[in-house]
Length: 183
Image (cartoon, rainbow, N blue to C red; front, side):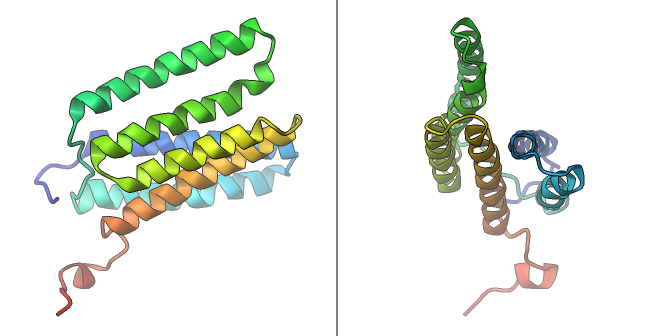
């Protein structure tokens, strides 16, 4: 859907998701003890390319994702913060701080599933399911491997989901191709 307005809120939301992915990848890289230069490249390349794509979609093309159920979207955001608070409290109280990041990933992944319904965007549902699965499987691994798997797996799921969302919204088409219809 094309709009006359630039979608700064959507852009900031997508950039926050990409920052979350970069944080997860950094945690995975730290657990894997990767060199700093490699870590920066792993974080910067997909993040910068995707941010540029979201800028093009939301500010240049003015083709944002719009929530078809704003009340559900608002509830999801509130419940996400409540879940994070509970996970932080539980892991601290039970001296299992090592499980905080996998639980955080599961909470974020679970929040993407109803968000996909609110946006009527199946990519969010698949991405959320993948993040929950990755987070759950990572908890079965010993430390630091669960952070490596949860970190890189969650980041890759978010980056891939973001790229698919941009592709579906026509961001990767050139201006000539975007106005062409197939007969």
